[in-house]
Length: 77
Image (cartoon, rainbow, N blue to C red; front, top):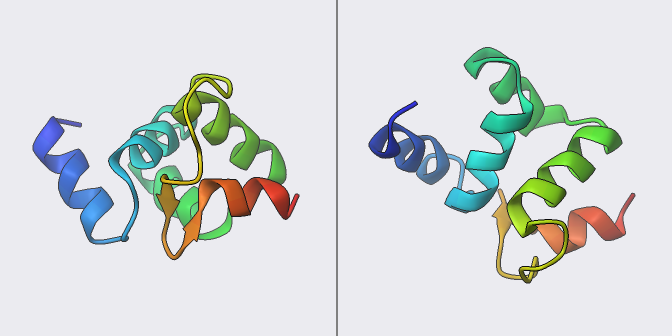
């Protein structure tokens, strides 16, 4: 997926580009990415968190997956 497509994919889902990129990395294809965005497993959420935060090196409170921050999603696991 090209950068502009990634930005559009993220924007229409109110999702941070870093999280969108991580979702697309974890997913097997775009269809799986749509499924993952809507209904990710705990394991998939952790994998997205690891990729988006570089294993915790970057703050997750400013990264959004829809209306929830990535930090909130991880705390709910």
